[in-house]
Image (tube, rainbow, N blue to C red; front, top):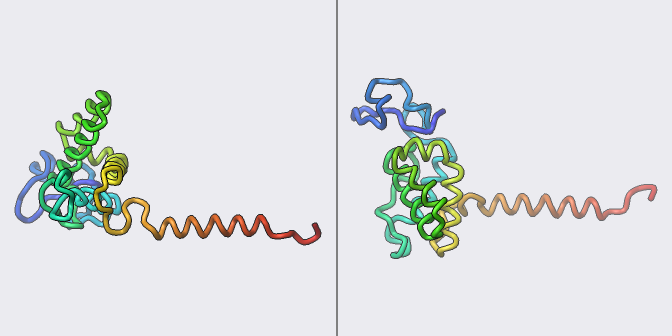
Length: 166
């Protein structure tokens, strides 16, 4: 599936293709029912929501929480672009600022094309600034860390065991 929402029954269009009656919007994220099932969108929504709502630190609070599931829509894309731009400004790196500013021309297209990097950037930015973690532990949840740790221990134990005939 693609990254962008398809038009809903309310006749709202997310892009010129949808307004023209295209069956799919830009080949984007989200399914035809307009509900995101793609883990990339869900991860981005979780990271953006770290900075939204009453539980976000006041210095980083950016609006009210958005639904935890749904397509990549203009609200999510714009919020992601704003957070990406803020991170760039905080870094004071003119190259990062110029790169991040490109997202304002077409937030949906920019985020769809860079969703992995933007999600990771927002996650790290939140972590570095003490913003509460997203539910599930962010990009690398505790389950992933436990599995990787168990695998590493298993490899270590197998390598340290005496071999038959040695």
